[in-house]
Amino acid sequence: MIRRIFLILFVLSSIGVAAPRRIVVISHRGEHLEHPENTVPAFEAAIRAGADFIEVDVRATSDGKLVLSHDSTVNRCTNGQGKIEQMTFDQVEALDAGARKGPQFAGVRIPTFDQVLDLARGRIGVYVDVKSVTARDLASHLEAHAMAEHAVIYCGLDFARELLALNPRLRVMPEASSVDHAGRLVSELHPKVIAFDARDFTPEIIAIVKKAGSRIYVDRLGAADNPESWQAAIDAGADGIQTDRPAALVEYLKAKGYR
Image (cartoon, rainbow, N blue to C red; front, side):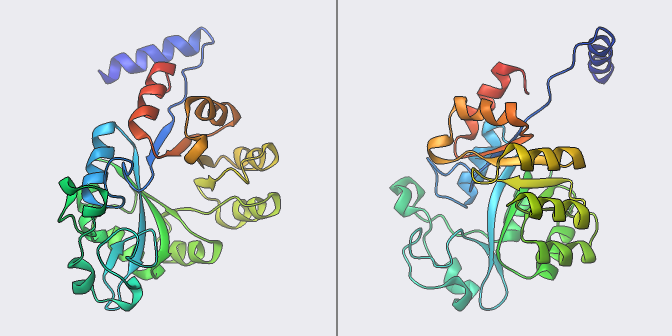
């Protein structure tokens, strides 16, 4: 099989036809349109859809356990109230994080970061959105679960510096933000990948990142999460797309020859 793929690529290159690049699919909070966000069912659905990464939001409880939640409080997604940083892990674990999405998800819990790293290992990459956690804790968990080289870490410049000092193999992924900031990221961090959203996904900033050889992962969420916008992002230089619709995006990319 590998020999056949190599032969196809060789033939394409010899006749001057470039093989289409593979576009990475990042499933935002798992597949959360039909499943409770940031939970095991949402992540399993993203894996079944064929996504390359699950996006997870990492926070620490008051007793130092790393759990997943986009919000700083449990109010919106569970049957509880309170700030995660002021709650113990036992208090967080006792909450129902599924029933609000539908009775079929009653009893689903907020997962730990450890639990999700074990679920992902060998099956899917992890796109870590740093919410409230120390660089040392994050790095040690990724290393302990053999996921240091299978994760990208969305974080600020200072946090990225801390991570790389702890483990240079970690793939930090700061936000491009502006022409000046993107240039600084490239010169200081030499990141393998840089994050973009709708505000900074501009030709000037894209050019800086492309010249540096970094990959571009861009958000296409909400109203922009559709085939026309996906294709526009690819045409502008995106190497990966974060989506709320992983199955639809995977099928679109297959149809267009990007997978």
